Length: 372
Length: 244
Image (tube, rainbow over all chains, first blue to last red; front, side):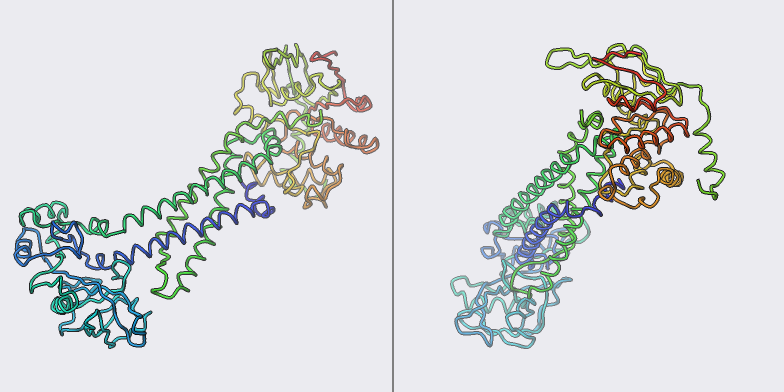
């Protein structure tokens, strides 16, 4: 094993090519992963910020917020279900926002939410009408606390009282206002989809004690006579348009990248092993077992991979720091970086395994009588 | 040897010198047969060879005569098809490959024709390789390495890589390496083939000196008849058969 380490230290150039390629692969994995994480966060922020046990849509909406309508009666039914501690109303409308300093055609798409229940991610809704919290990605558009934004064709004014983070929806920035504000703005700008007082699009349900959310979901849907569809937070996220498709596409690309990494390591270390067949023959003649020799190969592969991942992680973190918030949806999360490293290490080990047979087959007898 | 040798070091040297009645090598009716494309090739046929514990034997024969096969079997690299092989008191006739590997590490030394030093290790580190393979006693190995380097006149070359050593120096490192594990038997494969006459003579003198001072047995494979003068005994081999 020390032999393997010494070779790495004294002949770094030999491993240079593999290290460079693995670094590029690590960077690719971490960037793509960070992009996926950023896109997903941008889609799901609003839902995650609710920190709900269940989200209740109307049954006819096919789990789509925009198509869903919850009547006051259903709300009362849900509130009455045993195990429901809170059932807050939620509504949304997607409109273009006019921000001071931007041109008349330069609209920023935003989603205005009306909500009731606060959570760790969302403070209480502003009491006075016409006011809202803004997702901090709007800062990148030049919005400051106290600014008034005009949204929709009716140019409804909304005053920004402060900022919240990680609350985006469908890739767009969001505004968080009281239910009354939302209904008024919805009715002003979407006259063909008016909402009457008391009507909302979904219910944010918090359970009474740590029970079983799927069980509670069933009971809620029973209580409303099958007119609602209650989903856990994960199910609601999955149901968001495009989210699972996006993840699927990205994960396929990431999977392919890992496969390439395995092939790179396999080829590279197979080549190295072939070059070293003579050396292995001598070492075996001197009394080194195949296991020890292979352990040396593994060690070298692991070290090269760790170095590649370290460089990749630094690059990803640097990119995260440099990209201005709200421009490219990229986020270099610790979980993603560590996960990518673990995956690449596994790929390196698997890649090495292809050389195992060759190491086993090296014959010490060839070291003798080299010239005969 | 330096005057500041410790008692332990003295003991090691005298252990090397103690007269040992156990033969270094006993080969009885050893036969090695290979199957090559449905044909049976007899590489070694009924070889009988016994070496005293500090005997040096020159093994002379033309190419393809079975010298390499005999050395491989004596050195525990190959198992015989038939027959008995006892090295330093260990019967290795039926050892598994794993057992043979351990045996080689602990009891046998090799000096290959093509020297085969590890190119990215210094002379000293090349000597220490065997100990690292087994990871036994590092301190003792270090002491032994230093002692051998001194005896072989390589003290000031200890930190050099093989690429910085002359042919003769590399050969001496290889000899040192073969003695690191205090073997019962050392196998030399054509040690002088790459050296001119004068260096070749010096080399064989050195080999004889090192073997005798340690009481270690050796088989020197050679097709150079002049070398035989330095051996205690010469054995000829032709077509897999030994002649006394």
